[in-house]
Image (cartoon, rainbow, N blue to C red; front, side, top):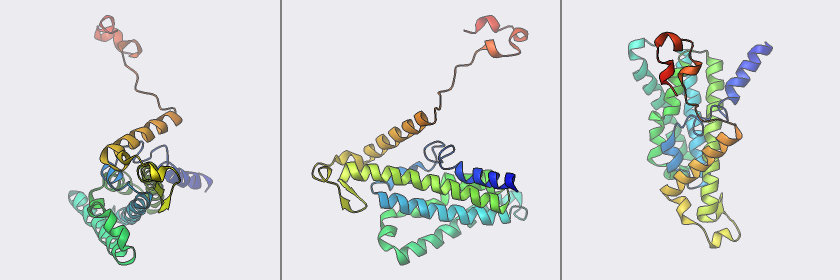
Length: 224
């Protein structure tokens, strides 16, 4: 029981930092760059994506032994699109301002690499509970990444945060940060900071010295 709880805990926490879909796996770049001019937009897109991810992971996992392999991908798309349509109706009815702010990017959740990737790589191969935990973790990680980006861009680029004016900065905002170039710059800085904090090292150059077959292939002397 303890091992199972630890396993489920790992499935939830891995998506927050270690396997963050945006900052580590570099997935979902389109909405990340497009809607994060404000922190509230980042939260809205993140939570909407989490809702779709959780619902689709649960359904796909529950039906994984029923869905024929030949129609696996079309089935995934139909399931994901159904949840996207549902969250679209909910946002349009209860949070119309957010619905208008997200625009077409809300609909594009259907083809979001994060959701489809988790469906193919995890939900279709694991149980319902594990798939739900995986979805929650990935959704939280995605939401936090978008919220962080939106906060930085809104504070520096507009001098505001969640509708509140920031003293000094509000009178002298750097408009570059709410433009596309500012989005790329902010994302790059955050990714670099995450890699630094996680002590992620760049890939090492490989040579024949560490290869067990170096002597038999006859190229050991050619490698530097």
